Amino acid sequence: MDKFFQVAIEEAKRGLHEGGIPIGSTLVVDGKLRSQGHNQRVQKGSAILHAEMHCLEEAGRLTPREYRNSVLYTTLSPCDMCSGTALLYKIPKIVIGENQTFQGPEAYLRSRGVELVFLDDAECKALMDEFIAAHPQLWNEDIGEV
Image (cartoon, rainbow, N blue to C red; front, side, top):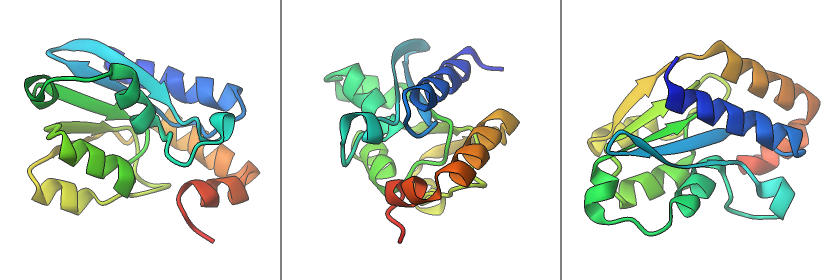
C-alpha cells in the first residue's frame, strides 16, 4: 500500500477515535508529504472541516506551481465542496480510497482534467460502513442529506 495513502487511513482512524467521521486525507507535493488531515466537523463544530479541507488548511499557502505538482489522497470520494477546492487550486490528481458509500462529482472532476485513481480499499469501506450503521443521522448531516 502507498505510504501516503496509509497516512490518510491513519488520519481517518484518528478522526473516529476523536468521536468524528472516519475520513482522512493527505497532500503530497513534489513526491513529499506536505500535510495531512481528517474530518473534524464534529470535533470543532465546523461547517466545512471535511478531511480534504483540513488537509489543505494544514498545508498553508502554496504557490500555483506547488498545487499543480501535487496529489490529494482521500479515503472517500470527495464531495462537491472538496472537489471544488481541488479544482480551484488545479490539483491534477486525486487518489480515492473508496467511492461505494459516497460518490462525489467524479465525472465533473474528470471533465475538468483531474486524474482520479480508485483504490477500492476494503479498510476504508469497512470504516465507513461501520460508522454509517452506528451514526446514520450524523453521516447524513455531513453529506447534507435529510
